[in-house]
Length: 340
Image 1 (cartoon, rainbow, N blue to C red):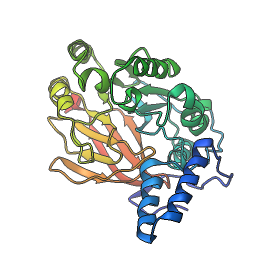
Image 2 (tube, rainbow, N blue to C red; image 1 turned 90 degrees about the vertical axis):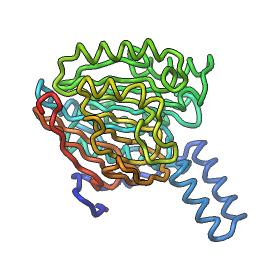
Image 3 (cartoon, rainbow, N blue to C red; image 1 turned 180 degrees about the horizontal axis):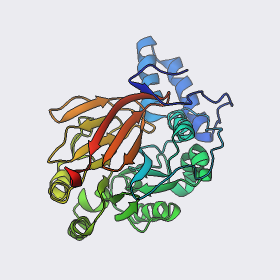
């Protein structure tokens, strides 16, 4: 059923294939049943909302769609891509978002997804690869879609260790990335992927990464400069604005003409008014939800599952935030800073 909203994306019918029950899903259902039996009515509802939306333990249905391979068109003036963050639960919420991503491709093909981190919850990517990546995104994978990855905090289990280093290595290897920070040119844009977990949030390696970032931004001749990082310098959510990251990267972004920066970490959607010329977006509701308020920098904020569809045509970028039901909760346009 199509949801009401600002705008709607074509193709919102849900698959009727039965949900897949993984061991983790069955465990979640068992825990939910036990809590329901023990708790009172209001407590049961609170627990259900927490488990259903905040943790995403319930099993879901992987998209059962076959997409036309390489149906998109990318040129020196045009590209369409998606943005997704904090998506690695393997549960119902992730499957619902992934399903809409596939249906959106049918209407508006895209050849790239920017992942803003936390692509594997509840275990390592090697153990959960099928659950959190292959099953949700098989239609996109089979269509030949490319992925860029910013490392999230769950990849390092909140702290540095040999195990965390191995997890990071596994993720960048599986997705074929050159490291935890790098840049990649796609059509008219260059994407600057930044590691805010290991170097910037904890200090180690910050000098080296920032020197690379300053040089990479300075030598870029791309019409559009787009940043991808996990921790949001601007957020009205539970984690809030990450000031260490803001102080480190905002001056470079402002001076070098970065147009827009996509982040995750907080499990909501939020877009800022331009800050020193840069629009910041939190798109961290790919599988879980948390609360969001409103700050003086906020242009739009909602706590709802979503991903983003971005279309660049020459000097204009059109951006939509889309729910699993196909509802567009926010839509805005940017003019390239290089042409202002």
